[in-house]
Image (cartoon, rainbow over all chains, first blue to last red; front, side):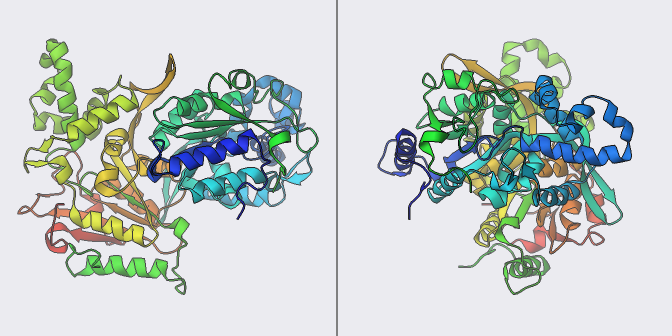
Amino acid sequence: MNPLASWNEGPAKSAIFDFVARVTDERSTDFVPVARRIAVFDNDGTLWCEYPMQTQVYFGFAQLAGLVEKDPELKKRQPYKAFLEHDLETLHRLGKKAVFEFAFATHAGMTVTEFDAHARDWFESARNPKLDRLFLKCVYRPQVELLDYLRANGFKPFIVSGGGIDLIRAFAETAYGIPPEQVIGSSLHMKIEASGTTVNLRKLPKLHSFDDREEKVVNIGLHIGCRPILCFGNSDGDLAMMRYTMTGDGPRFALLLHHDDAAREFAYDRDFKLSPLREALETAAEHRIQVVSMAKDWSEVFV
Amino acid sequence: MNPLASWNEGPAKSAIFDFVARVTDERSTDFVPVARRIAVFDNDGTLWCEYPMQTQVYFGFAQLAGLVEKDPELKKRQPYKAFLEHDLETLHRLGKKAVFEFAFATHAGMTVTEFDAHARDWFESARNPKLDRLFLKCVYRPQVELLDYLRANGFKPFIVSGGGIDLIRAFAETAYGIPPEQVIGSSLHMKIEASGTTVNLRKLPKLHSFDDREEKVVNIGLHIGCRPILCFGNSDGDLAMMRYTMTGDGPRFALLLHHDDAAREFAYDRDFKLSPLREALETAAEHRIQVVSMAKDWSEVFV
């Protein structure tokens, strides 16, 4: 058995092995009981590709195409027009929250069960247009190995994502082995509906939580209820949860994936408007965050 | 090994054994994979005693005593006065949500870490006044056995309670073996605070979710993301999640504890204003809910 086979030898891989060895060694002063080995992972750009737009946005595109069939007038109005034309420049100008909120709104009205079936169906054929790969094949192999390695050492990994909680739940179990109850994300309000002999949850067109930046920490408090000891992110949207992770007692570990691999994936950071990496990169040393270079630290990128 | 040793032979115990046998038998058409063996339990009145008032309310009393020391004028105002005088009649008239919201508000302003330490400290000596037992000794032994039995059969049990999420997290791991991330409850809004080298979550004096009735189902959708297959409750506040549990596909099981044991605990149902049991009892047969009689089905009550 060769854990982290797709990770090159180097400071990042060594730091992972060192941390896991310390917290699992009962004789170590850094020992952490299994129940407290909580790890949190961002999803977009950390566990799978987020470029040129997060999968959530492409899912919104597809939803919108259906809405426009029913109401062609929508085509003329913004932001519908920008969505329909995949006008990234206009969408980038709107900003992440507005774009995501719009993408979420396109699937309000469905029950949670209907949404799940619909999302699973969409994932069967939906592809990242720049990589020309199925979104489900844009999952990072080294991260799947890391999740397996952490689980084998008693960790419980959670996803904490700005993406829609139900969209992530539709693939996270298959892709990462992470069950629905360990997925935290942005969410719409829901209402309960009893009709005849059945009771369902229906998604409402109103944002309940936009799980980005400080809100990620608030949602960790709500869903998990204890401070994680490991956090892996890739953008300034993850800095708050990295800082929260790093400032408790005992051993702590934060990692930041740097997309510096134009040959195999993409090279971007400060300039990616929908999820820039600037402050987290500049303050990584100060906050004892381990930077992971996709180009240098990973021998393989995709599953 | 004798699972459910504190359960008497009878229809409730048989129904539990039968359900668990069916969902864990790979040759059965009722087989459910481990990942979907999600069970939800109400807390107050289901896993421990809730009479004459939920522990949450007594915790509020204790908090309030501290506040009044600083501001004696509070003593003269309602609902402070009723709280301070343990005036149950007035509190019952206010209703569960108002009483709980007031109890939650008394601990706003603390960080989550401070609250946890404070609650654990309080539990060391706080007692149910009618039973004259430590609250931590008001846990029901048959339910601890049931939780152990379900876990041994691959179930993942969650608490879904109207009580404050952080108060339950302060004792649920020790009392029931249920970790913080498997506790869902009422919650206050929180904000993140970075001061110096540390980052904390602070509780705000504003209700985020009152986890009762329909809201229990909404929070199951948010936190768990799939429909449970087993639900155990004791009041009308649990009926919505019982109905949600019972109306999905495949095998399903709901249980309702009836407090009919004045000799060992209490006998109450319709008349308990803070959490009445009326509709759930009257419609139990229609909704295929297994009623559990504390007097008849349990040979022991407390741990």
